[in-house]
Length: 245
Ligand code: SF4
Ligand code: FES
Image (cartoon, rainbow, N blue to C red; front, side, top):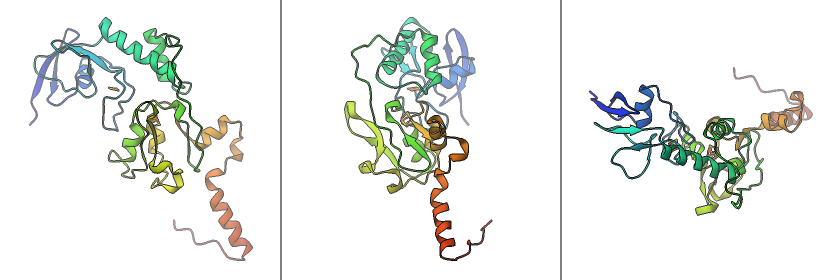
């Protein structure tokens, strides 16, 4: 049986099940913690640090999505230091990557008063759009390395391991092993990575084509192979195979 821990968050007495994160404990007091890399379906790794809070007695700000609540803690989620840290993270993201398809992050920038021009000399992440499969396109200039897609492709859901980190340091980016095109990897085109991507770096092919001005009735890319195979069969005078359903 799990025990409860008692702590104070922004002056509220909170009783949370043992093992709860500070973010979950704050949620019990009705306090919403802003997050980017956190997703309920993936393992938290504390990468973006937007969720940081102040815990009395701790020198550093603590990422609320991974730090466990413990007995007697006094937590502050909205101090000047917390606000400044969150604002700076958003400013650095705005200065270095394309957030045009990230409405939630854009809203956070507005809400926190982050000045997206504060780092004018920063180098922007530029990447060529990768369009190598019928299911989705990848535009890593919009990627903030939250790692959600890697996790959902691995032990968190699909156990496919098609995506991973590529490169080192500043050049780190998400990629496939040996930079292979998606059809040459273990990817099964399940689409789970697209579903968890917070920035539009991974975009369904149909949505991408519509954005490019294609009409809905022109979007047959995903079934082009099937149509070609059927045309080949008809040319050879063969019947369609029976429908398995
Ligand atoms: S591609 Fe999307 S889900 Fe994957 S790490 Fe980048 S932002 Fe996160
Ligand atoms: S949401 Fe907690 S570190 Fe990203």
